Image (cartoon, rainbow, N blue to C red; front, side):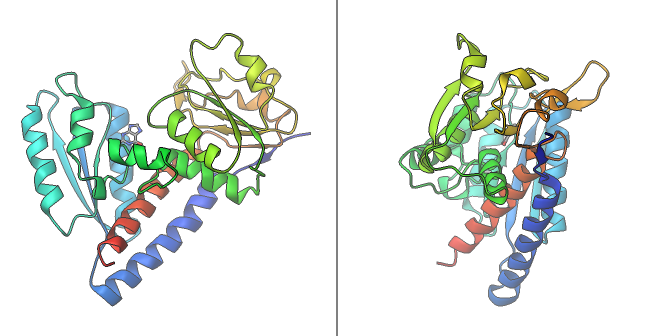
Length: 284
Ligand code: GUN
């Protein structure tokens, strides 16, 4: 049997339309336009595309955006001064520094410089701690988008075996916290895991977030499982592909996200949701 596809483009369009409506209402009733500031350092082509897409998504939803671009050799103190200025600006509700940063930067120090109240990525240590305590202020956008997709697919979570492949701060770790909060039994696998297939074959929900093209194949998946592919890789021919080998996986899984058109569009959608939420909180 072929798996049902979880369509991230369709879900993202639906959620973004709701966010645009809420942003318009906020503007009409309170005179507040949600505003996201995005900082890009360097010329990494993938980061340039992500930042362009984030700014475009803001504009389409009626949000204001500020884009600050720095050359790769900029002094960190200059970027930190910009962050301080954005922290102090009440018309700015979200601040995001696109990662990775060039090597002269201490990325943790940059993330800690962002006001936790404007940290719409949810990467500040204070917000990481709040998520871990089950009391999140901002949920990191990619895992937040995955949770929305699971919800839209009516995937049962309570007591489910959830296996995450990848332990990054951006996806793997917060994903584990969110699934745990929904009473999944969570296993986190990584590059040193001894028998990856042993773990993945037990998963009712399998989240692949490693950044290795098509490494999860159909024979590693439990029949009927929900397979969420967070990977965005390029094949040697230059085609986009995920961490999951879609062709073999879709013959075994019950529900699966494609790449492109799966988790990707939901990441930016949840960034908008966090920015709107931040703007609304300033009125409380
Ligand atoms: N680089 C890759 N993913 C992300 C993300 O979600 N946020 C930021 N700021 N940088 C990233």
